[in-house]
Image 1 (tube, protein in one colour):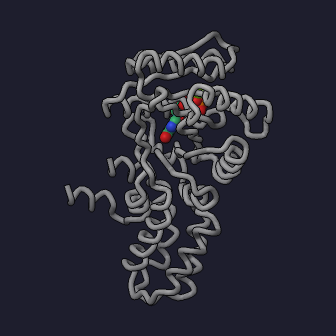
Image 2 (cartoon, protein in one colour):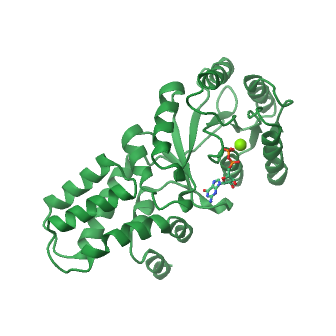
Image 3 (tube, protein in one colour):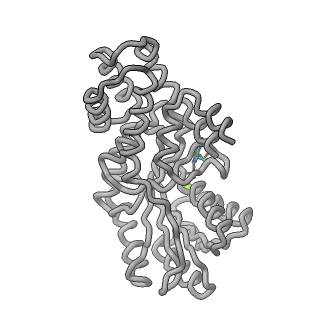
Length: 310
Ligand SMILES: Nc1nc2c(ncn2[C@@H]2O[C@H](COP(=O)(O)OP(=O)(O)O)[C@@H](O)[C@H]2O)c(=O)[nH]1
Ligand SMILES: [Mg+2]
């Protein structure tokens, strides 16, 4: 799993290590050039001003004497920053019925595929799962979820296209409860955070679900496409302002050299990061681990090291 992670985020790692190469080769003390290079490298990977400043400040305050301590110190500091948001999602059946996960995000972010991957993961963990086809905007979206449902042997509750998503999801809550389902994962239409009518629709979904169970949705998860760069950050902020999120999952880290956007998301929103997507396969949706992520981001020989451990 670590190998897939390390491979998945290799573009970001190459960018970070490539950026630091100029200063890593010199076996000298950490000087201003090293710090400036570190700063620009972190900013180039979209780590954001706050994270970058924190790491540079820390390195500056230590007397380092070689490359290895620079890399390991940066890795450690990154791990510490990320630990604050490391909180694996462990759904369990509630008194009122299923644990309800509402999945939101813009079109193409990876909502439907992430739902399929989560469904498979929870099923493997012994939970019964149901999907709600709440993306009623496009007929193809319902069909896509149904195909996953068939393949994974997970029931899908749907209505005709154009149906009210709140009604579909309420139907699914009822069905899931009567069938004793543990986890209900609801898909929603990809919406632009600026389209207030669509945001209002999501609020309605939340209100309706809450009638069913006062604590529901138990998880409102935003799916963010890492390749969107700074746009991902503004999307996440707006979604959080408008519908109050519980967590973020970040997809397509394999498609970008700017995976540092995760740090920017973390420092701006301080929400748990549940899963990260590093490819298209099921195994490529991984539970987020601070230590592994930081290590995969920076360790020069991460693949070999892990191989040696096994
Ligand atoms: N490379 C890569 N592709 C992904 C990842 N997650 C999702 N995708 C792809 O992104 C595309 C859009 O996904 P979809 O789930 O349909 O997005 P939705 O519109 O938000 O439901 C699909 O082709 C997925 O296979 C990932 O972590 N890595
Ligand atoms: Mg979809």
